[in-house]
Structure formats: C-alpha cells, structure tokens
Length: 65
Image 1 (cartoon, rainbow, N blue to C red):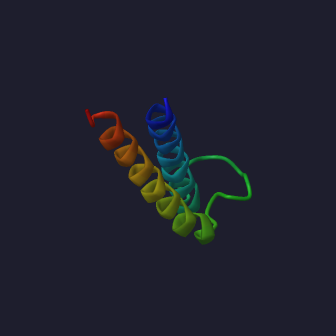
Image 2: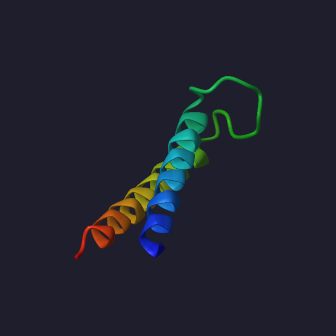
Image 3: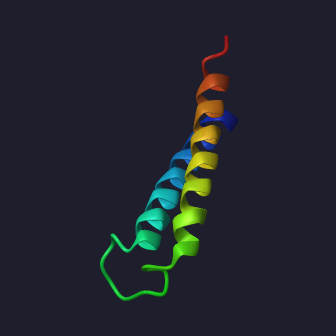
C-alpha cells in the first residue's frame, strides 16, 4: 500500500508541477497571479521532477518480489 501511495502522490505532484510551469510561462489563460510569473516557471519543473522520482520509486518498490 505504501508504494501505491508513493505512485499516486508522484503523479499528482508531476501534474501540479506541469500546470505551474505552464502558468509561469503564461501558456494557461486567465488573469491569476501565477500567470506569467517566472517564479512558477522554475518551481513547476522542480516539483514535476520530484513527482517523477516518487512515482518511479513507488513503481520499483511495487515490482519487488
């Protein structure tokens, strides 16, 4: 169960990171405070990479006998 939770958390963090990246680059429409703010264009990929690492670790742990 622990590895499934790691995978789910990893996927969620990855998706949030990609969303933040697009908002920071101004790709997403809207007038929110995150749109066009370069800080989120940096924070987003960092969060996405952390999410990928968690998801991969969860998958590796799940596939062990």
